[in-house]
Length: 145
Image (cartoon, rainbow, N blue to C red; front, side, top):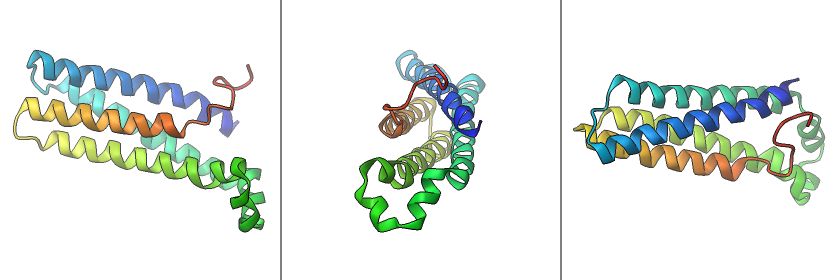
């Protein structure tokens, strides 16, 4: 059940990332204010990434893959499939969460609205790139289908 929730939540994260990125790009191109809507889109994106990481950490703690890997970490590191889920995927996702959080802080502290939008767009794109790099594309995109 936790894996299904984690798999479905990725779509929420992706949708909120796209919305926040489009709002930031619109602000850069249209000279719009860094309004409540742009800030809210960025905040919801960051919150969704944090929620996804929390669900992922719970999954990491109860996963049979993790338990198997922790029993013999040397053998786990030699198996690319196990290494991916025990080390690479969590590392990329935590980096994406850090990037999203820093983006929120740096965007809010920009000297003017154009800089705020530009910082938001760059940070969201970086975070989204890390998220896309860390998604296990070999798994079904929708659990159970």
